[in-house]
Length: 203
Image 1: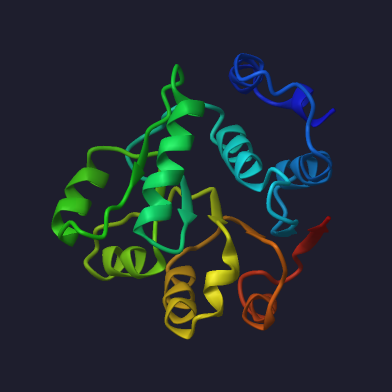
Image 2: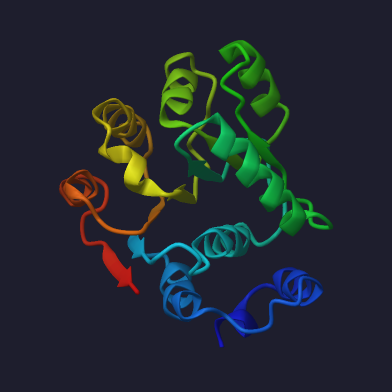
């Protein structure tokens, strides 16, 4: 049972939400993600991908705040998804010291930078915004431990793919995990870059 090997804070939260039994996808994916490997996770909608992303990120960060620089990034398609995912994430990290922040594309990059400098553990943003933050030296990636790509099909758009390539060149070392319903050509191309020697979990 993958849940039994998670941090006690996570187990408490799962119990509170009455999530007692992992989905088949979670049973397959959580142990492999915990191992630290780069992973392509593919499964249909409703398989528990978003919950898996949240649980494994919390586990990686040991459910506690450290320093001020982000230790986890969650890449999303757009502003709406960033804000929606932040809302879900906050319900899980409440009562821990973890700090999450979703970058709202409507704000100027300087506003986002000052918010991040206040101290963030989990940063949620679009590829375009992350790239802008890096170009303006508004984001420190030296402490990054895990880089998640949520609903990664959006990377099939060439502009976001280019932003992703620029972002990953700024990251020295971390674990990469992509979540999608299928692996398209663009996602497959990542194996030639930062997803080299990655594992695949498919349902």
